[in-house]
Image (cartoon, rainbow, N blue to C red; front, side, top):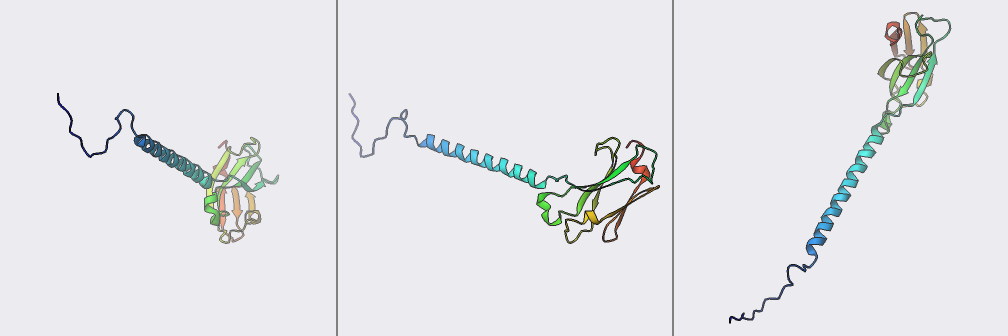
Length: 160
């Protein structure tokens, strides 16, 4: 018969029982992954909200009865803000300018263009101080600074 020699090494529990260390490490690692995932989703949602254009209509002017384009009249010129909350310092400068048919009642039906206004002092009432002139050859939007945007009649009539 063979007998084992006594040793001074501490005895360790059987492997089947384990001390739970590995399980706790896996739990901590999984917990970190959940926190990183939650942070990532929050960052994406925050970025989406802050960079999304507001789409607020800043001003609108209706075509007067004295001008007739003889195609889906009357029209309305819309200024729709395309700035985002992220761009707060230039919030009152960037707009989509659209000349749309009022007959269809849909702001998507018409001609849209992006335009950067010269509102360097970020005045919220700047758009309301713009002047719109409806002429037989098109529409002119004049800013308080004197800058002008001309949209030719052929760009917005004829079912565009």
